[in-house]
Image (cartoon, rainbow, N blue to C red; front, side, top):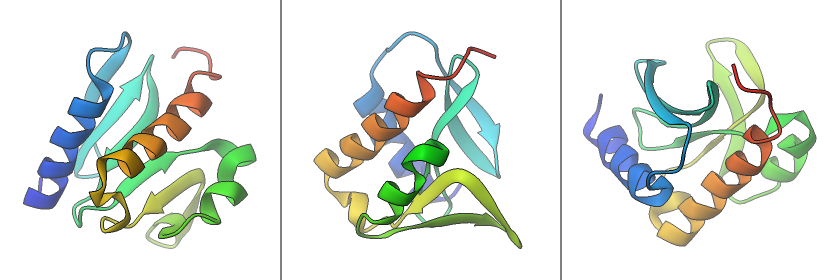
Length: 111
């Protein structure tokens, strides 16, 4: 894991606290934070944040500053966005993105 992604992971841990059902899992060459088996957010190597917003929240998320479609190689990941690291330097903004992901992921059945 890169220094940027490790620092972001630590900030995410601080934001999430010990909510029930949270697990960290190795994924995409880093870690992902999971809730009841569903991916919530994940710090990327460059310090950006992978956020699960769902199909219904996708367009609204993309309208936010520094938010882009999440792509893995040639494929765009439906229902996921990537938020630029400089946008989430502020803890309140990071908390807002985690809350957005949390609101969606809690609608999913546990895996």
